[in-house]
Image 1 (cartoon, rainbow, N blue to C red):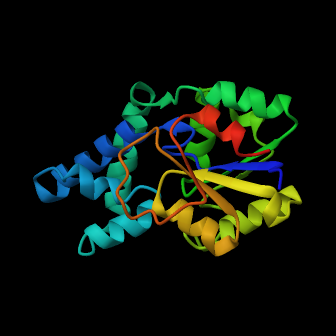
Image 2: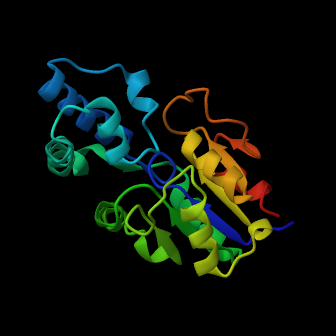
Length: 210
């Protein structure tokens, strides 16, 4: 069935936030542990909320202080570390030309989602944006994706969601929506599960949605 509604994860799918996220976590680990963390460990947190990651890695610390450390570093350095993935502007242009409706479902907070979209002049491209502030449950729970579908007026079979982590693919499976695992960001951790499709370049999506 033709996919009318194209839903994107944010980090690692639309915007390359990986360098900012990695650098921010390394600052936290240096501050609270006296050493940096392996990249593989950090990659496995991608797609998870900051609160969940902090609770897991720093259960004995003041978790609000840990989160403030993370966010302070990211706020100070994000502009120099962020970039939009090659091919994403062209993909959004082509989706608009084909009359498709695009949306975002992310575990990032609304404030930085809006700030980063504005940085690349993208916010007005998306009809619906669901962030971690909008739901009590987060990916891989289906609630954020189901909320997006409701706001879009979309049936599950009319939609597809693109993401780069196990949280995205799990969210799609739990919501009964086709999924696309994208491979243009960080290396796969191998635990994403099996998506409906894999793509390595943004333009490859266009051959799937018709």
